[in-house]
Amino acid sequence: MNKLRIFISSVQSEFADERQMLYDYLMTDALLGSFFETFIFEKLPAIDINSSEAYLEQVKHSDIYMGIFGKAYGYEDKDGISPTEREFNMASQEYKTRLIFISNHNVKERHPKERQLIKKAEDTVVRKKFGDANELKTSVYAALVNLLEEKELIRSGPFDATVCKDASIDDIDTERVQWFVKTGRSKRGFPFLPETPPEEILTHLNLIKNGKLTNAAVLLFGKQPQGFFITSEVRCAMFHGNEIIKPIPSYQVYKGDVFQLVDQAVDFVLSRIDLYVGDRSQSVDVPVHYEIPRTAVAEAIVNAVAHRDYTSNGSVQVMLFRNRVEIWNPGQLPYHLTIPKLKKPHGSFPANPLIAEPLYLAGYIERMGTGIPDMIKTCLNAGLKEPELVQEESFSTILWRKAEVTPQATGPVSGEVSGEVSGEVSGEVSGEVSGEVSGEVRRIVLVLQNEMKRIDIQDVLQLKHDDYFRLNYILPALDSGYIEMTDPDNPTNPNQRYRLSVKGLALKNTIDKTPVTNQVTPQDTPYDTDHVTTQDTMQDTMEVTMEVTMEVTVQVKGLLKAIDGTMSGIEIMKKMKLNNREHFRLEYILSALKEQLIEMTIPDKPNSRFQKYRLTAKGKVLQQQLKKIEKSKK
Image 1: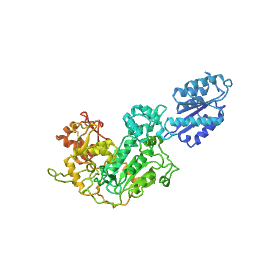
Image 2: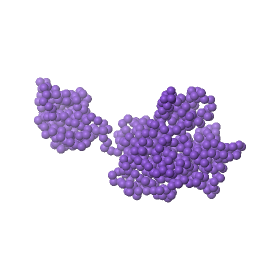
Image 3: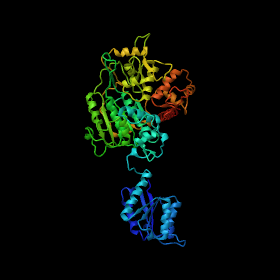
Image 4: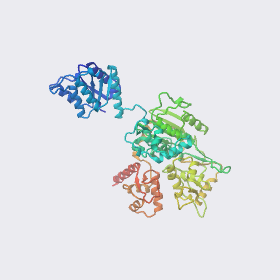
């Protein structure tokens, strides 16, 4: 950036030493010298114009007018006005930033016109008094640092405590604040009621500063946090093997507030690692555990989101390989923390304390410095290798998966385009039941007992993001006929429950033929590649969005080509000349929603008759690529 130019104005003879001192100081100070350059008349070369005119030209071309007013008024021109006052007037006329410093002289010691000039300055700008050169230097430093902070060129405090200048209380999602209060009351005894005004909650959490929202307030409770901080999203990718190699079978970019980002990323991982369902003969409850314990996955991801450097252009990245899960976040450890210290109980030094506190209150983190030691212990107790912590230009956590593939208990499993389980299920129930079953549907079938509410199924599977669960589990299971509602005429009934259909029971019986443990494995790629990951390859993955290399079905490609702006399902069907609404919903709409290529205009009411669809940013990129491919074929 270009440096800001400061014009120092004073009676030259009275403040000659101070002017030179400030010039030298501002030129050599490591911080201020990076942002400012200074003009004093002593440095003006000999030129063939009136000196007063030359100085006024310098004022015009400066960004900041710095006036030092003392006892003397100085030389007066034919109109009885001094150069200092002319320069002040010019700075005012040109709307320059004006910083005024006034010596601690008695009023009676000042020239009458100097008193008038000081009075004029005091009526329009804030001034600061000084007693000697050192006080002047300190006052100038404080004023310039404050100016840099106001212009957001530097930050004096943590990023999360900085005011988000473009945000207002209208940008806060009241429902998310209420959710937080309910959760906080349940987890930590948070002392407010859900109906408490959001401003009061945010003020209590120190998320409002001088009447303005902080960055933390927007990231925690904003309606669209990525509208303010575009890289605050979380990018998740799954790879067939142990290296970053295309094609990438599943790639998702998650947006939302901090809590939603954590929940979606954790659910992404859990939906794609092995799930074990134990023997149900000894208990009504379904014993379920994942190959990597959920607490370990959640700890690694919440740390990445909570402690990342939000000023970085990078995003948190979660990468699922056949032998490990890597969680990467931009940022460095505090200077007093090392990797060995992290592995032991240690003091809590959050990079973003205003973000960390609500995460603690909602039960997402502890604040005793025990999270990582507990994560390591949990993985070791599960028979896994010790997680690795790596600090390079970024910080990454590596969670190791099982050393070898456990024999399948669920029949043939093969990797799908979406990276989930695919298998053949067959059985005799009024005819043959067969077809491909996704891993998510298979998991619901395994854990669904009698009649269960959506939240109860979700709890058994240890998944927290409601929309993710509905879209990836409930809706596909309903659409494929493996589960059914107890009250199908009222799908939004708060007492709605789900049960296995005849088809679902047949699938469950097929799975249950194998005793003791049922393992659902997302893919059968062998553990045959060495662990190879560098920061460069991790950075390459961040560019996948623009390439959109994931494979999609012919139906979804056709849908992307057809959508123009915002369209209803009927409008899209007419444009594509399709007639079967159920087939269209299942193969086109749900598939595209699942891959986050399209989004609903009314996501809270998926069955609204006013519902329409539009492309996401990811969908727009793929649409453009499809158009380029078509064009190249012509």
